[in-house]
Length: 359
Image 1 (cartoon, rainbow, N blue to C red):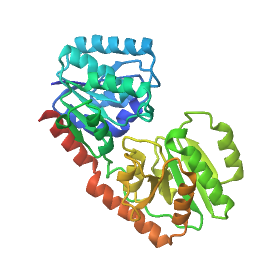
Image 2: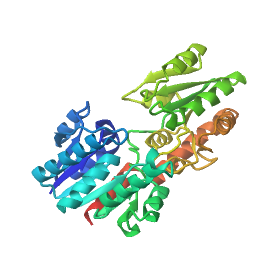
Image 3: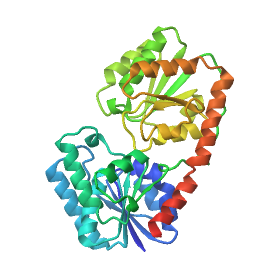
């Protein structure tokens, strides 16, 4: 069988779908369509056939979006896949539309709703209309949290019978092993993700500043590329001594290893993989009480949940964490690992995905 995968970024596809693609390659010919990047060579080594596809990931640009639709149309006519699997907003919408038009079997993955669903304006209505057209004939639409699925069903984008909620992309428990819990009086917090407002970075900086100013012995390591201009504020806090910025890191395990607690105060997520990775490594989690984040935490057992966009609440929960004993912090991390083993094991997620795609 020929399978064509449409996505918008090589890093995300490789990091979170590699095991699924390896499984698909066992009995199928797999094509991947996405912009060129450093992980394309890894896909080729796995046995995938690569189609370089330009995608403007940000916003709606009619000219570029029509161009993407046309390139998908030509590609699918040429490759003649038996099945198309789409990830992320534009491949989901324009890839889904082309598959519907050409009567090709296709599977859609909703990995998050993005900012368009955050407001109730015309943009939201427009995006709902696009998704309705794109998802109407999909074999199945996968979701990573229950709330996202409810929004699609309630807005009549897709019938509930055609949906299935996965536990995110899962987490590779062999790669993210239990790490020894660090000792020391200085509490090391960790943030991994794009440095942008929607990840709650402003609230995190405010909470950290308040902790440090109140005399708490703590520091924050930040991993991830700038998405907005945070250079000045990061430099300022680095000079103050409590912030350490490391940019994008291929291997995050050494940073998780040195940390006491992972913090992700996002405004919205599909399923935050960084929460899963850190919990699997036996690190306590402080994250937003929103769909896509809260699922990773057994509240007050493996971590704490905070109100999103609320720096004061984040400060209170981070301070609460610093007041736990070493043994309490360590136990919290181990409880998180148990939760990952029970619910988010990558092997289980891949197996159910394959089953649902081909049943």
